[in-house]
Length: 360
Image (cartoon, rainbow, N blue to C red):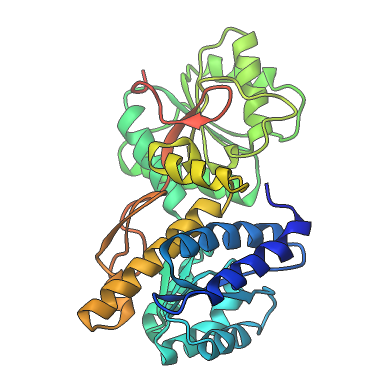
C-alpha cells in the first residue's frame, strides 16, 4: 500500500534510478504528485517506475495537476526532457493541452485513465498521438449486452436501475439492444437506492416471473437485493456493472452475484507474477499499478521496435500485440484497444473471478 507520505520518497527513488541509465527508451510518467489525486498518481508512478527500472529504460517523472490549461506545460516538460514516449495521464484536462505539442515533437501518449470518446475523436481528426489503454466510454455497456444476449436470451429478464445518470443510461443501452434483438424484459423499474431492504422489489420481480436481473446500480444496493432475494427464497441470477468493484461493506455481497467489470489483474494468471514481484518490493498491485506497469512495458518495447525498424514510434504501437500483466494488448488503427477489457466475473466471497462454469 502506498500512502501519501511515501509519494515523495517513491518519486525521488524513481528519478535517482533513472539518472543511472544512459541507454534504452526515455519514458515520461505523467501523474499527480500532490493534491487529492496523489494516491492515484502514486499508483501510476509505482507501476510504471517498477517496469522502467526492471527494463533498464530511463524515467522522467512529470507532475500532473489536472487543472484546466495545464497540459501545455506538461508537454513542454516532456519535450525538454527529450522523452520518446509518455504514459499515465490521469486527466483529460492534461491531454487536451498537451497533445498538440506532443504531436509536433512526435511523442506518443498512452493514457491509463481517460475514457472520453470525444477526446479520441479530436485526436484522430488532428493527428494527435493519443493511445488509450483505458476502456472507452460505451465498452462497459457493450460487454453487458454481449453477455446478456449470449447467456440470458432464452430466459425471463428484468432490468432495474437506481435513477442515477450512469445507472439509467447503462440500463437503457441494454433495453435498446434487447429490443433490437426481438427480446422484451418481463419487468422494468427504477428502484430507490440506499435502502436497508428491498423485499418489496424482489417480491415484485418474482410475481413478474423474472429469473435473471440486470441491475444498473451500486454495490451496496445490489448486495441488499441479493440478500433479500435469498431470504425470500426467490431464485434470481443477478448481474451488475463495474460499480460492483467497490468496498465489500457495510453489507457483504452474496457469493454468485456476477459483474461485467474490469478485473483485478493481480487475481488473474496474467497478472500474478508481476503482482508477486511488486509485493516483494513493498507495493500492493492495486488500482492503476498493473495497468501503468503494462503501459510502461508497451512504451519500452514499442520504443525499441521503432528504433530497430527506423520508423516513428507511434507506428510501432499500432497493430502490435504486447504481452502484459493485464493481458495481451493490441492498439487498433483508431488507437483504441482491439479487445474489450471488461469481463464477466463472479463474486466468490473474497474477490471477483472468472465464472467457474457457464451461466445456468
